[in-house]
Image (tube, protein in one colour):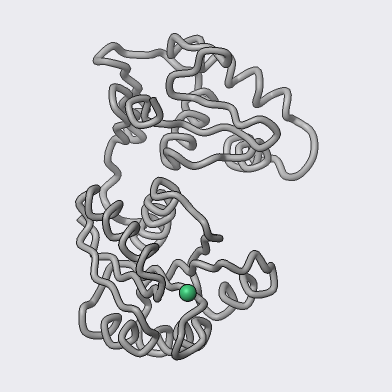
Length: 229
Ligand code: CA
């Protein structure tokens, strides 16, 4: 259970976020202005703050600086401005991550999980459970509907990376960087081959995906098949 503070002046967006996060068992408080948000960030001690940058009373970047002056709480900024400079300024001002509107609930939840992992690296490592798929990073075991799946080291690392970011598109470049420790350029074929082996072991194909869905020209994402159906 995570306590999330939403600072957002648009009532439709605020309501949608509260509904989505509430349905996932998060405790959500919300504020419609920068001032109210600052007060809540201090008084309600949230685990994570989702901060809209376009607020009616104070600029979101100033709210961020003021929160940072008094708290280390992870802050995810949400911006309608698909403006790289604004995003860079927010990250420099202490934002932990950002979302460009419009964004889906699954992506928001994935980013919340990601920032919480980064601030709590010593938290107990738990198996990741996505419907019938269980990925255990300690034992490096994978089960699907209770049956053990034998994976090579790289296949496991690949599946673990995707499962950690369930619902989120992971680019091949990110996969190469995380699983193969390679930087830019080349190597897409390596990823494709391992994805194909992984899919076969999970009993699915690229043409008929269940958990692992390719997003053409972008990357791949692992989804909960019941939620994507
Ligand atoms: Ca706004």
